Image (cartoon, rainbow, N blue to C red; front, side, top):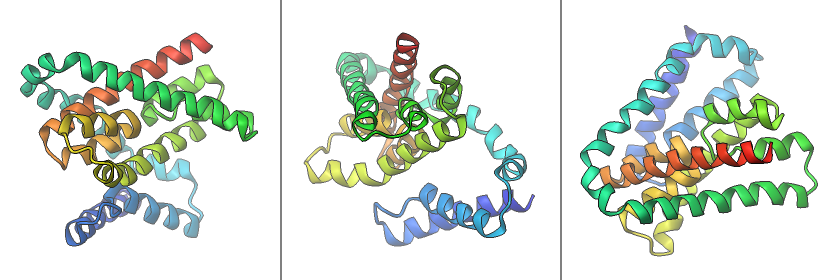
Length: 218
């Protein structure tokens, strides 16, 4: 139970740091990930042992995803009015992300395993692991790249969107969900319910599109 307690403690520490600094780069998930990774490297604890100890947290992932349906239901009237722009925007953004992940690694001559794993990076880590069976990518690498994609997007995208003048809640949420999936959606929820709802839509459509692309390529 030591690693379970440490994981929760580092996340709470990240929340505390975020509230004290109010800086967009201070992300609780990023802080917890870096601290836990450093602890695992220093203690040389196998990942399998760590994963077994934090299984209770993993079991909460599915209920957390299902809970996203609550704000979607509350904002159903807004979604009905803005449904088409949300769908087009989300699918367009995800398609661009998949195209970059498909062609840029080939241009950089990355290893085949990295190329295959990057294909599912726009999806959530849980979906990336499942799709790894079809892309023939190492599941661990696919999950890691998906998490990194979410972390980088959640940290970098909000200030970048503000910098380029994107301030509408739906547009910001859609961008976060399409690019940074679950972690981005958690970040979007901090900006308001409409932003979080749009992010949930973007995340869900991104998963559907990535899965379809993998099926077509495979």
